[in-house]
Image (cartoon, rainbow, N blue to C red; front, side, top):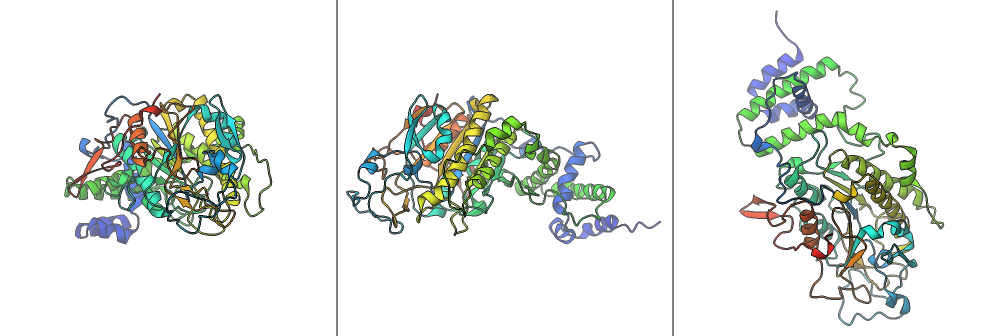
Length: 505
C-alpha cells in the first residue's frame, strides 16, 4: 500500500534538497528540531549525544571561584551619579553659580550652564554611613553589603558606543556581550534553562538592541535569551501560536522524529561545523525550556511575604500623572523576582535593563530636560526591586556566591542643561557591586569636588577593570578566557583590565 502521508512525502523530497531549503520550505524548523531532542532524551528516538568537543565547557574555571552567577543591572540612557550615589557638598554650596571646570569642556549638547546641586537630599545609611539620595533610599538597608566605585571612566559620550563598551567591552558592534563570555567560560548549571538570560525594559530595547547581548563570533548558543516577564508570551516563539489548533500530538511527534533524522543526516556530512552544532544545541535547549521556563517564570508560586517584599510601594511624594512610579516599580521588581527564580534554577547570568531608546516622553535615564521627572520614578522602581533582590538572595544563602553589578553607559554633568536637566558626562560615573565575595560597605575611588572627573586622574577605574574583577570572582582569568577570531585571541577585556583587589573580601 502506497504511503502518501505528508511526512512520507517530506522525507522523500528531502533526499534531493538541502537542509536549509527544506527548513525554509517546511517552516517547521525550530519546533521540530528542538522537541526532537526532548524525545531523544526520553528514549523515544535513537539520538546520539553530541561529541564532548561540541559541549559547552561547563565547570572550566581557571581557579576556585568565589561566585557562581551574576545579575547585571543596566540603566540605559546614563543615570546621574550626582543625583543618586555620589554626594558633592561643593555643588550644594555653589548651586546656581557659573560653572568653571578649569579646562575646555566639549559638551555633548549645551549642558555647561551653572553648577547644579543634587535634585534630592542625600542621607547617610548603614553602619558605613554611605550617603545616597531619596529616590534610592530603599537600598539604604543594603549599603553595608555594597561596594561603590565613583571613579569609573568611559571613552565616549555617544549612547550607542558607550552602551556597547559597558555591555561588551568594545565601543563598536560585533563583539560578544559579557554574559556571552560567562556562558562560554562556564556554561549553565541547568540542562533546561540557558546560561544567559536578558530581561529588557518592557517598553523596548536600549541603544544597539540585541547587539548588547549577541554572541557575535562565539558559538551562537551563548547569546542572551530574551524574556519579558509579565507578558502573555514571555519568550517569543517558544510555543505554537494559538491559531495552530490543527497541530495534534501525533502529528507533532511525527514531525519531531523526521526533523531529528534530518538533523542527524545533515550533521553527519558536516563534521566539525561549529555553527551547525551551536544551532542544534540552541534548538534542543528551546525544547527543554518548554517544560522548565513556565515554572521558572510563574511568580504566583511565591508566598505572600516574598511578593510583599518585592512589591511594597514606598513612594513619598506625588509625581506627574504621565509617569507612574508604582508602574515603574512593578515592572522592575517583577524582573528582579524572576531573576532570583532563574538564578536558583541554574542560570549563570541574568541581565536586567531599565530604560529604552524610544524617544519621548522620556522613559529612560537620558535626562537632558528634567532629571527629577525622568530619574525619580525609574530610580525608585530600580531601588525597590534591587533592594528586595539583595535581601531575598541573602536570606536564601545565595548572595554569598551571586554578584550583582549595577552600571550605566556614563554619568551626567555637574552643570545644568536648561535649568532642570544634565548633559552627558563620560569623564566619570558610578558603578556598584554586591555579593559574590565583594567587600561591602566601602567606596573605591573618588570623583573630584564637582563629580566631573576622577579625583586621581592618573588611576581611574575602567570597564575592563570591572569586567576583570567579576570574571575573577567567577574563577576566570580574564587574560585566559579567549577565543581565536580572525587571527586574534579575543577576550572580554581586549588588551586591558586589572582585578581590583580592594573590592575583594
